[in-house]
Image (cartoon, rainbow, N blue to C red):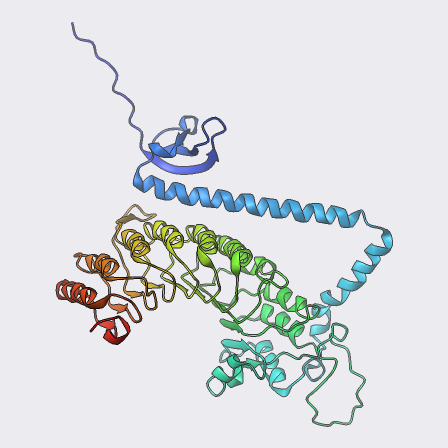
Length: 463
């Protein structure tokens, strides 16, 4: 006699909904929504039960969960601080209101403000006027000091777009007439100017400014604060660059939270010589987390910011939320094996989109390079379910002197794959020697995509 047993249920993952750390086993668990099953069938599954494609989505959910927790802790901390301020004596409340009242009157004064009295130079006055008029020819702006290297670099090429902040700015003159006599002279200096406050205000209102380069920050904080408040309101900037700025002073990146959260046009963030360290890396990772709401980011460039492996790991965790990064630069940041390990994991699910990777002048050795190439060579599954092969077209490894012929062999193995799209490769100042030259020659002979090789035998130990 035969018995008809019901066929076992087939489960296919529809979506990863949430993440938690099991209180009993300590393992990572994910809430899974099963395809063609009602919500009542949703279940918590350990990471070991997930396949490769689902695990990629699960990792993004985990990173998002941690970022939400970090944001929640920040909100709670600010709420507690506000409660403490509310409990302060009444005379302190009055003092706080008086201190902030001058920062909130830009809207009131904007319609009647005299640009001659709020700017320190004729050049700054012209720039403010063009921003106010939404001049379509003023799409990029450089904030620099008159005598610094950034100003000289752009002098002649972009000198008309250089805004030089006043070092005599005070916070008590916004829109008010100075005490100088009205003699119609052509003096461009004013001890009661508010260049930065008004610049931030008008940038916040701009619809045409797309590229903002901040190459200098003034020493005082009292007149910088309104500048950041204004920048928060901008929704037109597509590229934001900080060069040579101490972003930790005043927690600048945290102050720009609303800008990162709501500007759906931001495609590029660049930090150069900002000496972030671990604390700065945490703030930048938080900023990247804010950007995920709009999914617009395409280019991240970090040059000479003293990240080290620890800082890079924080940033990579936030980058995992961004599926559309096309160009990534992490150069001169003292990155070694642990940083390569984190970056390699990131590359396993972004290599199908990433086209430009610059890792020059770090501490990458053969083992670290192998981790990176393994990530680049992984076949990934896109959010649409389609298979993505490595899309990398430019790779820069210049200045990583610990890479030898052994590490270079992993790169040539990537170059000889049928799906390789690499077009440009930089290999200056490495230690590959004659053996590495032979390995490279063999890889080039089998590669069909490379168009340019930036390479000098004299800097690579080749006889």
